[in-house]
Amino acid sequence: MKLYHVSKSRSTRILWLLEELGLEYDCEAMPFGPEALQSPDYLAINAFGKVPALIDGPVTMAESVAIVQYILDRYADGALEPDRDAPEYGKFLQWLEFGEATLMGPVANIMLHGQFLPEAERDSRSLERNRKTLSAYLGVLDEELADHKYLVGNDFTAADIVVGYGIFALKLFREMPTGFANVENWFERLSARPAYQKATAA
Ligand SMILES: N[C@@H](CCC(=O)N[C@@H](CS)C(=O)NCC(=O)O)C(=O)O
Figure 1 (cartoon, rainbow, N blue to C red):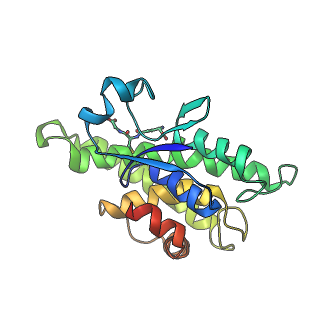
Figure 2 (cartoon, rainbow, N blue to C red; figure 1 turned 90 degrees about the horizontal axis):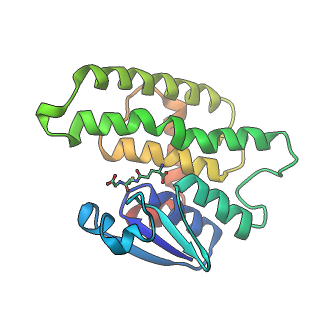
């Protein structure tokens, strides 16, 4: 497998997963920005011009959560997910999708309107709205984590990787709101994992 990676971007999820599973892979580290991501060579691999992208033999694909599911299907032999016929499997899929489809909406907005856009293009009302939305989401996560160690019961799964990346990004850009003790304790458990440390340093 060959992973196209930009340091600390969403491709960190895939590195983290590959490291947790102990799989062999090549990592093509790229700089962030249009020069690399919008180059004709890279657009031929991922026409969206984003990371991650994965090449595995005849398979070329984008979208971090789809890549996580693909690697679990093909190479994990049941690791890092509940049994597919167990009731927890539904919740596992829910958190997996939540991590990108729901959580990253406000996270990306807060990054843009809080830091990345030129001052004149930032929208403070949108920023405030998204900070409220983020806090509401973190409140749900905090309750969910009140009585178990990981998102799906007491076993670490790939859903922790996908959602945990969102918390990593918030902390990286100093946008993690305070007051979510269960989320903090859970994230501390995640960040103690050697695979997390290797992936987030790359
Ligand atoms: N939903 C996509 C989002 C991919 C994405 O937005 N990646 C960012 C890095 S975290 C990117 O490549 N941005 C470059 C750009 O938008 O120019 C996924 O989960 O893979």
